[in-house]
Image 1 (cartoon, rainbow over the protein chains, first blue to last red):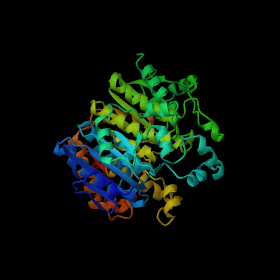
Image 2: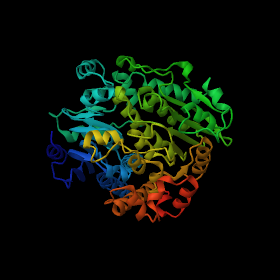
Image 3: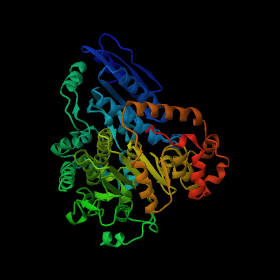
Length: 238
Length: 309
């Protein structure tokens, strides 16, 4: 699904969403109010400049105080890898964007991620993974690192990694594995109207961070929930 | 036991860079006050590393627990850069997430994160990446509850990848000369974009671009420490006392601060160009400055100190 198709599905009456340098901002009438949209389109890497454009849009929405939901649409590359970005503090800019989304969530704006293409590493953490609930469309391809690069770093043969990836969701790229990990809450059905599916996600938002519970139930992160619970239990023993 | 040995180590003499994670925690805390959660005796080891024929650690490369700092209760997490580069695996990340969530009910005076990490552990990449996102959400919850989250950065592995994003989520950061904060590491940039973009063998370039002094000068860190445990302890105590709130005003101020940085320094090629524009008299002298001379330089740079984080 392309961004244009997604926007057409969400806003049958039209919208003000624009894409500039791969950065998505705007909104439209949705349900009984407004839906803000921010994000990254066209497999664009996210650098210091883009992160601040998106965080500006999120903070503007929070300041407006309308508590309208914020949809974070993502088809990005990884973080922009350059000397300039690191010199200027890419870690601060990406963290700032994530904090803006987390503040919006705390301030009563439901935040929904929608990954419809690629995303990776720092760009993924600062956008889609900073939302309250993350949905994906079939064909989405989030990854931390592609398998050839994993092969290079781990010094394991690519064919062995490809074989391991079939049975072990914890390291392999792809939407199914991120669903199993609990990072992606749900895969949407492209045959059904998108606006209704997004509205259902907003209606059924769960409090707290349930990603480790999902990862345990789905088997992609078998021990994380138990470990964090054990730390909390031991911390409470005085 | 490493803990007992470290307890007898003089915090003034113990190098943060050289110390293990457990030594740092024990020497940082009030003597004898550290209590570890899920200690190595519980052998909570990675269920995934054997698949890659890799050795495991009893603590999965992170030490978490409770301690006293100047008599006040704090929660502490310390990454062990010597085990798989301090990278976030499933258990490693879940221990940090659990510690931060525990802060919400325990209400300590602060949560301290002693970063020493290359980022996500690729053998457990999806679990590590998700844990980083959970950590950032938990830090925001802890900060919003009025509990400062302080990051201390001066380890061998630096603070890279998702670790850099977590650091940017903390209330305050202290960094030493050896501490490096960055998202893409030098080798990652060189591998993807070529040595002309970033020559990872040029160590001076690495320190100038990602090192503690640059981060401190541009306001990416709030304190600069000598490479000793006592210096980090002193910095942590100071930073706990002046942590910014987590609210719209703080993030609006951070937005303005970072936009101003891009407007002023966006065309700079090298850190020395940035330092010159910040008003540093002799930018080329910065890398060789000792802590006192550097502190004097920082004191004249307006951008270094702020509440916009």
